[in-house]
Image (cartoon, rainbow, N blue to C red):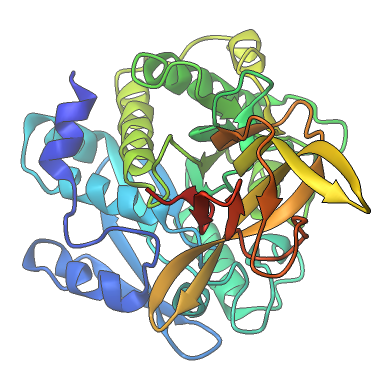
Length: 384
């Protein structure tokens, strides 16, 4: 099966970029081919509807939810691409709908999505509210879990550009985790099911994304929803959609997330799950914080009359301005930056640094500066 071609055929072109709100997805949920299977299952803090979509007649029940964190939209895009596949009336769609019953919550946190924040409108991280259930969105998710009684859970998230695949110098474009169910991080039957499935997904993704799949940290926190569902005995997979080279809008990452979803259900429907995949799973390199968006090397500065060669790093802040996500680069670190990589790296070759206010890069100032007067950098990038 050509997963790249399958993605092209099913990509939902009405949604793209990073800023995905309820207004973005509502027209998709109103389409005639899925409208009958869409329900409102609750409301957010600010009264926005939380939608579900259920389809399929298979005995294996799959529960998927996305945008628990409002500013993590990549998996929502991939989920709608996958929904398009399920409605394509192809042999593959019929196979999946006959094998599974899918229950999707495409946007659990519509208030956070509109505000482009991780937390909900009460400034609560829903992924730390799985025990206290203080928020309406958390209650909706838990009630659905208890009523639907899934056989597998798919917890769909984004991760920041700072994560790499161990020390390889490659970004962690997509990472997985079979969450722990106890403090000792032991492997019981349900966690092993998640581990084996992730091992199989990774085998497939390596054909398309070699060396750019990571394994997320499995420290146990019962307040996290994935850990809670794993603790309750349901195999749970965490997806973390990360950075692909030059893909800040996460359209390439969207493709690989779609591929991972399709692979998951092909493996399960064909009973092609690896047996005892613990070693394969543990051989997936762990995520590591090793990246900045920009690194500038061998920059000459004048510090108290002394010329020094140093390095500095800048990072994008994703800022919602007049309904648009703006990527604004700010200097966040100055020093040797040993063992760190940049998604964009520039060797200044001992050129002098200066900006409009000073001759020193300072933390939290915008990455607008000159090197040797003639090289101008605007928002982190060399102006041609």
